[in-house]
Image 1 (cartoon, rainbow, N blue to C red):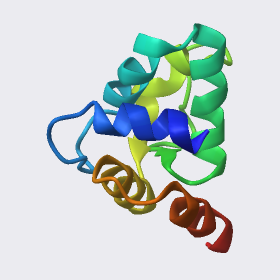
Image 2: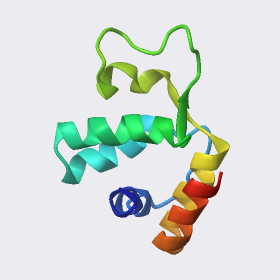
Image 3: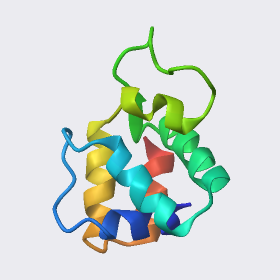
Image 4: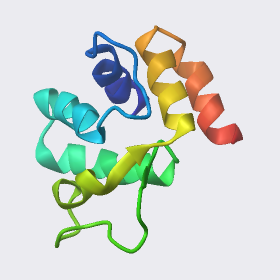
Length: 102
């Protein structure tokens, strides 16, 4: 999973910021992966605390699909750090450790 996210993180020329749309990451993932893969990654990114919903009462416009809820998602501080470290070439091994420690 981290290898897939790293490729998407590196596709962005600028740093990742809290105001960067989560749709930016998801669009980068869609370039190389099928919808089902991107959808699964989205929900795992929520579970790992990389992204979260900006409003727990309204987090989807209908279905249990990332495309219906991505507009309600934002990056967490943890997510921004992870994406920028992956973008900058930090080791995948270190990032796995980071995700399991916190």
